[in-house]
Amino acid sequence: MEYLPLIAVALVLALSVPLALTDIREHRLPNPLTFLAIVVSAALVLVAGISTESWLQLVVSLLAGGITLGLGYLMAMVNGIGMGDVKYLVAVNILLGWFSPWLILPMLAIGFTLASLVSLGLIIARRANLKTPIAMGPFLMLGFAFVALELFAPVVTVAGGS
Image (cartoon, rainbow, N blue to C red; front, top):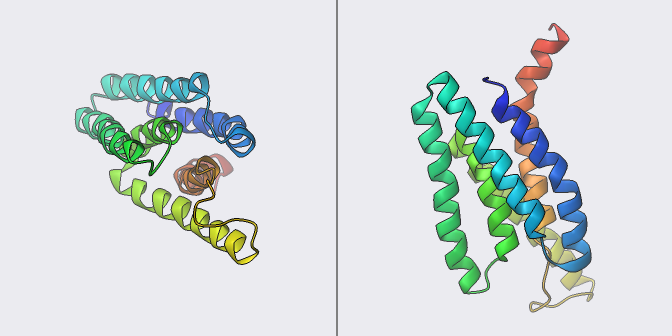
């Protein structure tokens, strides 16, 4: 049962591909996929928490998702981020909160740094300006993917026999 959160990470990573492609194309993250990511994350973490009696991990994980929802909603109200991004981050932060809530910080830092660098490059190339909307989802997903690779490193090492 301790592998359920890692399975959820893999499933959310798989969902990230169509989400990123849709966000690049349409500047939105579709509700069916973002809600599925939330349900997968919450359900597998809930089962893992109950079956292993890891109550603190479970509470921290769900709290990370709840705080993300609250802060994300406030950011969305001032057009700082889209609600699709908020829903994706809720799913991701439930998972990262299970392993360590501190993992949320590098994920966000990587995502926002990549988005800033790409935006700056587009502005320098005169293909965008400060008011040009940017699809944040793919950058947040890259940040999550980078952190997720670190989560899978011990599993790969054990499976490889090293």
